[in-house]
Length: 442
Image (cartoon, rainbow, N blue to C red):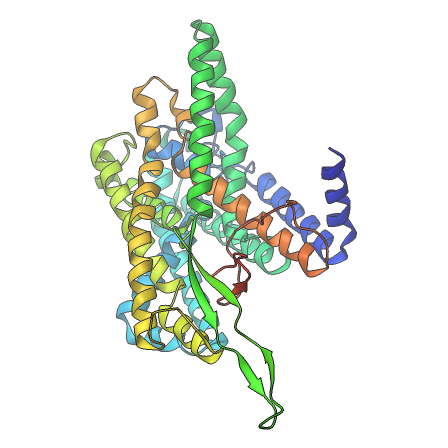
């Protein structure tokens, strides 16, 4: 306990880190307050408990969906727009050109993403009101009420997007992911209490303990999935300087590693796939087929999309050609592999091999709640039993802790752990850490 208190004091003693944490907590508080602001004229008591994919969406937005809040759509439309823009970046030359323009191109893409977010919201907002909140709509609601409500839902999503961007720029961690994580955490206590009440009422204390133990096991495996790396040994050539007969070795020759993560994409494939699964569920003609999150076809398509997005996101975040170029410039090489194209091909092949089991395991954990329900676990608690919720919680927490640790280490403090390090996703380029330490390639 004393070590924990000392670590908190160290974190709080760094002015920049303290400011970032306070700002992040403040913006999270604003987001949670906004999730309780109900659309004008709506009676939340007439809205039933969400089920199926609506229940999952309600977890992601911290209950705002079931309350008909101005933040009912949450950040998911923005994520859907980001997915579409990234996919278009592969096929549309104009977007490819913007991606290669550096900071100016990134600003243009962000602007297009915001416009596309508004367009998606304009489709999803009326569908949400008509499909889910229909009984709570005030009697005699006219055109002006519909226009006002849709405008507020669109504005709520854009406000949530702005909060996420501010957390990323001025706070700590990835803002969009943190908002999703906070929504998940908000629903966890109620779901756990419901499961306890259900099990204790039926004399199932032993079953409850088994559920908790198995949940801990799944959490451990999820952490191993997020943290797992395959280290590629690299060798640095020795540099010799000085005149003939008086030369000196000034460096190089050290052994170091390129750590390729088993799951280089982190939680983004889960978030991307889940965002796309929400779109047909909010369209009345498709909601029948995609509203049952425990159904075979929903989970089959969901798992397939996760595997595809894992490869896709890995391809756009880890560039084997760039790693090979960085190795060549630094005078380093992989033993037994020729520099240049051969090195890039070797890294690409190895990355593909380790990504396959990583993506399959990621998909299996994501659909685990469907199996939990078949064993009698309540739906609300089952959504945390592995699945999207647990993976997002683990991934975002590790990523945030890694950023906190980076601030500590940059100011010559010890990390969050006495041994090892938190291997989250860094924002830098390809790092090669010598003497066996593990860095990041993303």
